[in-house]
Amino acid sequence: MNIIGRLTKNAEVSKTPNGKEVVNFSIAVNDSYKNKAGQRIEQTEFVDCSYWLTPKAVTFLVKGLLVELSGRISARAWLSSDGTAKAGLNFHTSAIKPLGKPAKQENGQSTQTSAEKQNANTAIVAGSDDDDLPF
Image 1: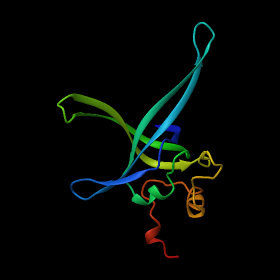
Image 2 (image 1 turned 90 degrees about the vertical axis):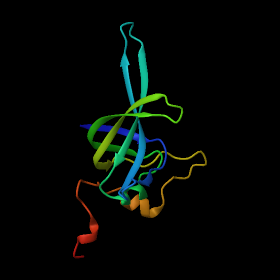
Image 3 (image 1 turned 60 degrees about the vertical axis):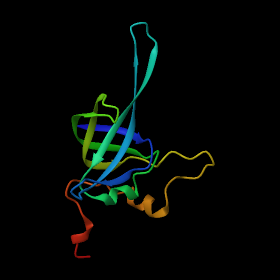
């Protein structure tokens, strides 16, 4: 499954209790359609995403970046600290393809550094890791 959206904030790396690192981020997916009355309806959905293949992705996953994600959806359920049952969906990302630059900040400056701009031109695909390249 593929989805396209913009990051709602900079990605963060967290560790599971067994020490495995995961990159967590959220994207906003926009949709528009006409209802039966002919009115254009704009709708935005927010999708929580996780990327388990390499924590290096956090370097270019910055707020406002337009990305195409490949992966699968899973449901999760938990109890909040007050004992209330909660549920949600998570998109387990297997590939990330940057499609554009991050949106500009209010002061007109981009949210990316030059190193992040260079990384944003490369798609991250399942199993790709530059550490084992001979050059």
